[in-house]
Image 1: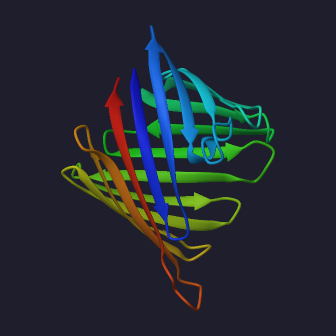
Image 2 (image 1 turned 120 degrees about the vertical axis):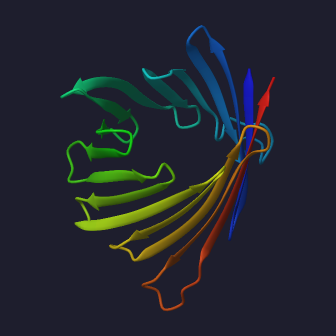
Image 3 (image 1 turned 180 degrees about the horizontal axis):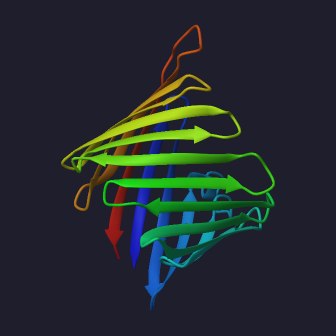
Length: 211
């Protein structure tokens, strides 16, 4: 059985979350809790139950909202290249998302996602240079705008910068993942369109346990 504990701090609030998971054959069962579950005594607030078969499907059940989320995954080959497909349906929102990623080679891949029945959709190209630097331009159909991101890996650390042209939102992020010391992420974002350019800061830490 595996468990994880996550703490999150934002400029104006903080919170915590926990996950407990175990495998039965090749199927994973998971329960997720947030600080809302215990804020006013034990309750069902923030409780999500899930069953997952890695690479095949995930079914999430939000207990307080009595809402289901389905995700089905599959992989096919197109002209000899792997195409990873995702079908996601949120019953409460009555929203369905189709997502696909075509892996051209070890350094190049293109992806697209679309919300059925709407103009919401994104196209993204990802290029990995030298095994450490990633460039990701993307185009948002609904906003008719481009977004850009670049990430640099240095051993266990990843430094990432992003910019959304539609909202003029600049983001900076530093993350580290370690099997021994857990993982953390520190991020800052600032809206360059605002007269007072006050950054929003977020810090997250995650610890994993074997039970």
